[in-house]
Image 1 (cartoon, rainbow, N blue to C red):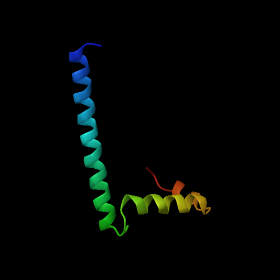
Image 2 (cartoon, rainbow, N blue to C red):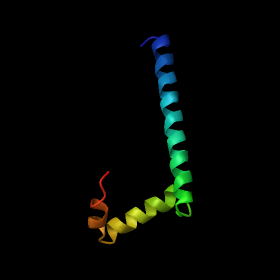
Image 3 (cartoon, helix red, strand yellow):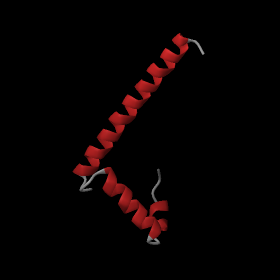
Image 4 (spheres, helix red, strand yellow):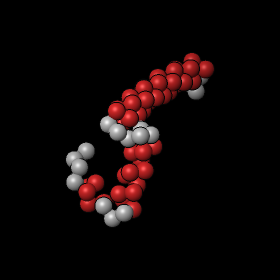
Length: 64
């Protein structure tokens, strides 16, 4: 891989990371607005609790 190709690859990865960070930030903000007190952290804990608490069926009903 040439220096130029590596620079293009790095630029593409930086752009993808920026998009990911923007989406995660937006998701975190809307979760806070919806009542998840710690945003993504609270959502993750809630879903894990549902899965491990035998409520997997309730999660499977959602159409993602």
